[in-house]
Image (tube, rainbow, N blue to C red; front, side, top):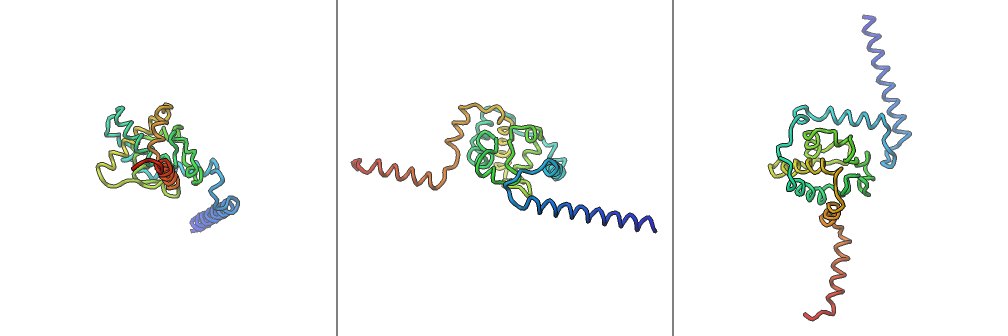
Amino acid sequence: MRAISHLLLGLVLAAVILVAAGLVYLKSTGLSTRGEPGRIEASLARSARSMAIPSSARAQPNPIPVSADVIAEGMAHYADHCAMCHANDGSGKTEMGQGLYPRAPDMRLPTTQDLSDGELFYVIEHGIRFTGMPGWGTGTAAGEQASWQLVHFMRHLPKLTPAELDAMKDRNPRSPQEIRLELEEERFLNEGAPQ
């Protein structure tokens, strides 16, 4: 009985220490997204992500054979939907991506490239809690096909060519301000044109 009470006391004491350490960390870092996650925090987050992905999803192979057309489809989708946070080159160096906590990852690096195709697919479809990564799954076959094409494109990111980067710029969404400026320019240029 005494051993059980010592064990319980030890567990309560460990829990109190963990909560206190968490509060000290929160107080010292605040809730700002400006700071970089520390090594321990990043390691814990990667471990939590890994544990949260079911092993069946992790082992799932990409059912779409890779081809130039599949890469092109994935690239077009990525430029239109993903580049705002992840950048055309996959670096994550965008205003949006750098404002997130944790930052949008450099998807060309091993921390992303070493994930299995199934893990990448799962993250695209389901997102990651407590980050800026939403789940994009639509529950449709077409949506899943687009996600698998994105997985192939993500594998291609480290080998992007300057020509591919230029092609992606044309597919990036434009802001309302850019559209408004283009329309104003067009109106100005057409003002003197006969109708």
